[in-house]
Length: 275
Image (cartoon, rainbow, N blue to C red; front, side, top):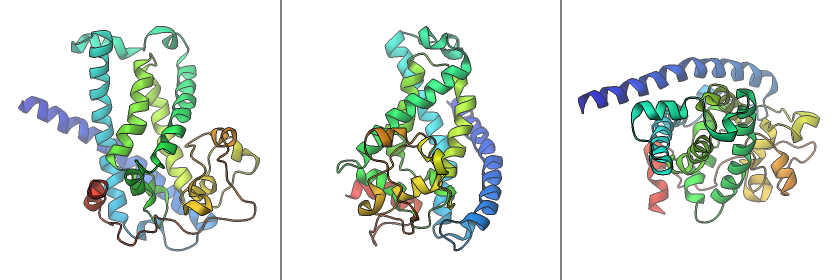
């Protein structure tokens, strides 16, 4: 039991150590970029309100997501494919399996990005429904929206969203090795679209999600909060009628509009269960 506990601590520590240099790099890059191209000029990101809350989300949510992802992959392999031993699991997942694993790794990564983004588009719309909004409201609660707000997700939102979609695609045969490419890309992309930048991406706004595109999604529902659900590829919003980027206008107000919404990390974790 003690050995397993030490293993958990080791994995958590390794995850934290990977996050630290990424955090420093993103913090420096977006501090420089927002100094020259801020969408909403004001204070620097490290002086934002609730910075401690965002920092806790930024470091703790990836650790939780990693453990749950691994657990679901182990259970999925056991129940779907009858694989139970550690060596068999490693061999099973090492290079993927089935038709999807026959593709080159770069093609698997591209397939993973496109399919997961399509699925998460619909998951995102589901979370904006009445039944699930109390969980997703945590993500929209940041009034000083910036790159570090990207990780502000309630655990339920993450687990019944990104983690579940990831596991489904890996259980379908995609090699976990794609995460070596997809993981850094999604982290950087998520930070980018939440960054305080006035970048519309011009004609490429229909190809890749940008800061202005996603910041409109964080405004009130009657302004743009019920639009722009795609995380990476806005083509889903174009195809399903939810694309919104009014010309010559920038979003300027964010949050859920609830003055009683908790500001602390712990308060936000229990918020959905009090509704």
